Image (cartoon, rainbow, N blue to C red; front, side, top):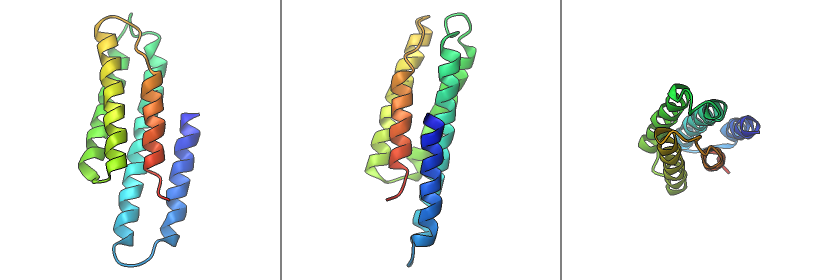
Length: 129
């Protein structure tokens, strides 16, 4: 489900390219594409986390790798945007990742629902229009 949302977001960005006009429009579109691509990567990592979560108490390595991957991409988005909605979504996702990491460190199965929800929100705010 999350990947369908990501594909829809990327399609919306692609459709926005011909519609954009004027000075700086290319830069806006490029930033939107970067955000959408990175959001897609974050969504994939969230899916990876979901798959790894069930085994996290026995082998937390994969879940931790997924969380590290999400963190890295969130940092990239945050560094490249000055959009308040994107920053808010990134912060929400970061909080969800921190909570999941705490669960893993406490030998608990991580709550992945908040991570997936935050990923959907991030994809939504990275979609222009």
